[in-house]
Amino acid sequence: MGQTQCYKILSSHLVGGELRKGESISIRIDQTLTQDATGTMAYLEFESLGLERVRNELAVSYVDHNTVQVGFENADDHEYLRTVADRKGVIYSRAGNGICHQVHLERFALPGKTLLGSDSHTPTAGGIGSFAAGAGGLDVALAMAGVPFSIIAPKVVGIRLTGHLRPFVSAKDVILKVLERFGVKGNVNTVFEYFGDGVDTLSVPERATIANMGAECGVTTSLFPSDGNTKAFLKAQGRGDGFVPLSADVDAEYDEVFEIDLSSLEPLAACPHSPGNIRSVSELEGMAVNQVLIGSCTNSSLMDLRKAARILQGHHAAPSVSLGVAPGSREVLMMITEDGTLETLIKAGARILESACGFCIGNHQSPGTESVSLRTSNRNFYARSGTPSASVYLVSPETAAYSAITGVFSDPRKSDADLSDITMPNEFLIDDSMLLKPTYSLDVKRGPNIGEPPRNTPLPHIVKGHAAIKVRDKITTDHIMPAGARLKYRSNIPLYSTFVFESVDPEFPKRAAQLRDEGESGFIIAGASYGQGSSREHAAICPMYLGIRAVCAISIERIHQANLCNFGILPLLFEDEEDYQKIEQGDELELVDPIASLESGSFTLHDITKDLRIPMRLFASEEQKSMLRVGGRLNEVKL
Ligand code: MIC
Ligand code: SF4
Image (tube, rainbow, N blue to C red):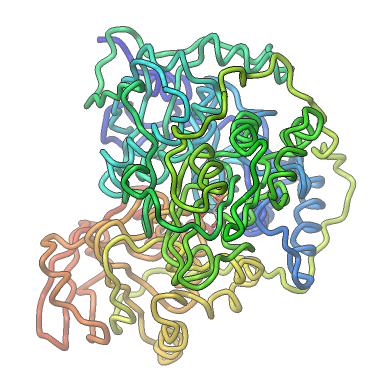
């Protein structure tokens, strides 16, 4: 039986375990990336390992998330990141150079390589054929130290693409179709692998859009073959040497195959408040729109902006619509400046935003009360935009641009623009002057907001306390640790911890801290798919800081589960989902004999208030069990 592309890359990087679906394996990591919001903690963790220099092939530190710089904190973080990168052998991508995933695709990602990034959209590089996964900062710090990365050998879902996209239907609509089919939960330890004739019709940036939002399904990564289009893209980026052909064997067997006829797709939208809540644009037509934002690591490539500009050309954003455009990288910005696209956008009334995450992470551009915002980004989680009452819809650049003109949700197929001559350039405008190479000479600078990564204590013999909070299904890491206005506290755990679950229950931090100070262990009771979304390890570190010792859930998403183990919080799953209903917030809880239970993997949760004994299953590998025993990975790592 032939191999899938996924298993080909995994087998060439395998350093531990047996490469069989469901088994725990470890792989060598070639490239790493960090971004500033997760990066400060990742480099503090790397420093605490005591190594002089990074040991992996390529490490890049991007500054793209926190660029608002209200107050001194962001600027201090950037200076720490610049100096620590220089000292430790990391390439530093300065603020203004663009969004990590877009820049990495342009300048560094290569087919057949493994990439680990402290950001959940690292799989964007799957568009060029890298095996690229998101992880918590500590896992990335360890990968920089040359420590292999552990994953569960995934199930591989083949997505066969046939036909070709019709005008005004785009890569975004392909991934929204995939989200319609697979949803945002239940896809843990899965890889999406794209194949079929339809793949040939998609450029690398289009493939990257599709791979990017696989993250919303919760898959480990998404992969596209490396073919003629990949070769052309690398050549146009002046990196033709890095090309290697790569694809699945013709007789490769997938665990499941899902087929999409690209020719039959129509413009789609993800409705509030989940990327998995899909409807067709034609169904939503006529709804008044107040804001349109084009950008983010999903849809901010040169072609995206050229197409949007062509639709806008000769028109103006409707008076009721605030239109913003954030080019994904400085390369894109320079190219649209040169070819007149920028002028077209400005003439159409677009507000030109910085090449950064910006609006996508709720850093600015919060929409008005109860307003409708159309965005080309990848997440429309509740309150992420900064306005809880707003309705955020995720759409393609084509739908966004056309709706900006009409002022209402509109099907872009009604536009009279001609997009047929917009094709990939043979050469991109390359300028790497914002990528600083290490000189190994700078002193590391730490501002007053930058603390130490906190550590947990070993698992105690008695774990007794209260259900500090009970939450529903699909709690995202944005619910657990808000970004936006709170983002600047990422390097200051005591302060950032005062915002845990801010949009769900603002009293939680005080309550949990009080229990902690009384010597109790805190429990989080959660429904299905707890911790979906971002890779932010702060969603584990800050609850840990508040005394949380266990998360008892129906299911937990992959990256968050790893982050919990890394910081010594027990990820426990209900053996019987019905038991979730029985526990109430405030119940007094105890784990019966936690040390012995850790060995066996079977726990009993005693609800003292209800006098119930609830069977729980530990969701952790053998390696993770030992981290949990000692109170987290930082307590045991030896290099
Ligand atoms: C996101 O899109 O949610 C983020 C912000 O990029 C996060 C990382 C973070 O929280 O810093 C992610 O996707 O991992
Ligand atoms: Fe940045 Fe948004 Fe992409 Fe996250 S999803 S990396 S915040 S652009």
